[in-house]
Image 1 (cartoon, helix red, strand yellow):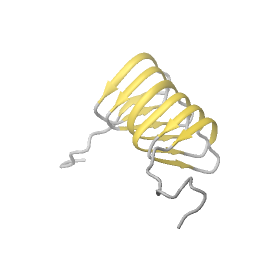
Image 2 (tube, one colour):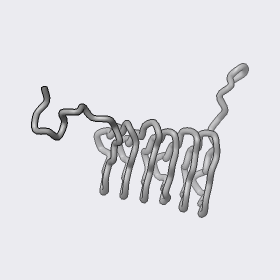
Image 3 (cartoon, rainbow, N blue to C red):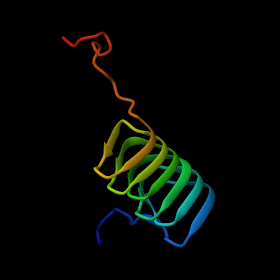
Image 4 (cartoon, rainbow, N blue to C red):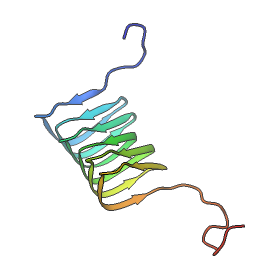
Length: 122
């Protein structure tokens, strides 16, 4: 868009496979296959039919495809209908939409009220 400071995401196309370590400071859309390690200061999108088999650390993520391994976001992760996750998802906010499949753990590191875990809330 003319006058817009927002850049388009980098796209890993549907018939593309990348193995190794990938890092960047912008948004990334995976339509193909990414294996290895990902360090991204930006938003990650894993589209329907895509595979992320990695240890990934991102700002935020939206998943409609398959994730195997560890996905960590500093802001939030959204698992859309059709998402398939095997492994660990970790973020302060995790949204799981109806139809997402998870075989693993969701870890939300959020502060809890002091009375939680003491048997009752005041």
